[in-house]
Length: 404
Image (cartoon, rainbow, N blue to C red):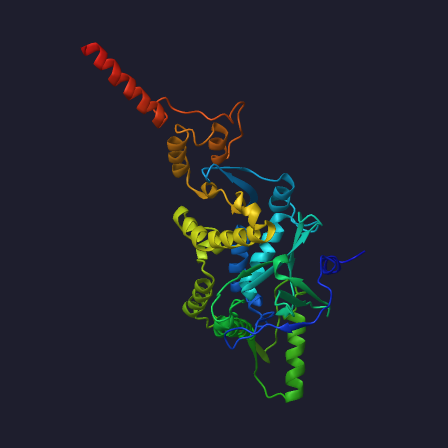
């Protein structure tokens, strides 16, 4: 059975041709190397990235078609919507795909995904790519390609239009995001803190007591007496919990001392890692308020959704298709995280305007739909502007006729 990598390598791969490394305007070269700083091995860094990826995984991708000068939009291709919103490829759900893509982005500050299209240019699947090295190259005509090297030593070259490319900390290189090198000193301090805590706790509980003898005993016999006492009375098999000693020895238990742990320093390092990733501790442990969630959505989730939407729209549709209003968007029901008070206020304002249907309002409140609940309803207090103007004109004409 072919592996996932073998399947990816067989997708529209460019045949080996003469290529050369792309020269950039800066002194940096267009080469991406997998981050080797082991940032993901740090538990604080991993928890924070996981919290971001879990929430981004909830995004729903959709193909829409704008109509009437972008004033309306309709659902697009059914097969494309299934790929975007349910199954990007045979091996992953849309949640898995978005989670992995987001995790790659925050660990490496660069994320890549391969678009699998049929002979007619229709999208069949999207595969996230996890490589140890990627190099931008050009052919003799100047076309831009990405040459990947994978962990098993295999490599493949794809045209840039076949790839979704996401970047973070996009600054010093024209084509790649900067590395996470700036957070490495903080992660190193966090590692030393964990090591220090482990040794401190181990040392604080290492010495349990002193066995004091009333007579002089040779070092060899002293060690034998100690080992015998530990074996007979301090072993877990001693379920009675009682020890008996004669007059020659006295056991003096020691109270374990608290490990010397500076909690303020630990919190400072944790906060620095969270700040670097753009999250708060309340987001990570899911105790956020409505306002905190809104800030997290706008600063982290929304930029990711916008970047992915723009990349997919550009790489999936031709310029002509885009000119006819074809677009891919990623959205989330933000009101699911709002308080019941905010949800109720929103429903009270939008349902009478005919913007929300009763079933959409019930969904916001996590309630089951009702029969005929998908019909838009509207308060009679609101009427179309043209109808209102016509009504006023008719009324004005009527008043003139009455005066005559």
